[in-house]
Image (cartoon, rainbow, N blue to C red; front, side):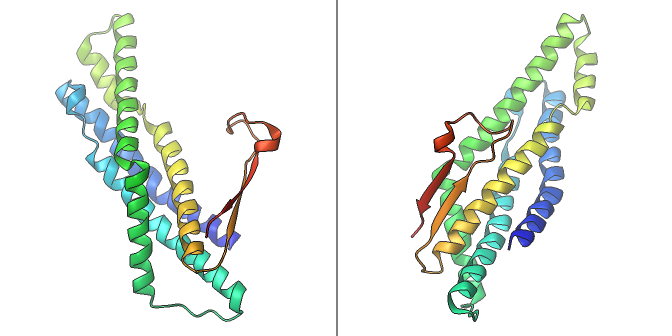
Length: 201
């Protein structure tokens, strides 16, 4: 399953990194067109995030479900796939509502606005005309790195949520061990708090 997960994760990044890049650039372009931060829309970004979580979540839920069922019985018996897929999608949608998808989208959009404001301030300090700064902003690609970061974060989150949903839907008693990767990208936490055991069902 690990190799399957890695393949799916890589495919998710390949699919959604360009989509996030496109949506964030659209936000920059909208400001360049209107010169109004309030005109920036987050609808396309929200749609992309939702699509990623549904696609990745249902696929990893199925992988997790099949793996655990096979481990339990030795023989895999899948219930009607359509029914399970609908169940997983409904649970993922509810999870996104509870965890604040709309709030996440607004936070990402606000960060885009902050990047734009910093770019404009830099142009003013350098004595550039506003129209020249806006032209440079449009071509700057200031959101490209964030697009990849968002894709990595949300692809991983969607896969983890899907795996847990798939495990719980087997009806088996399951636990999840969270193992932190101790590298420069991991937040600072005490050594005895890096691994956590959670009961899922």
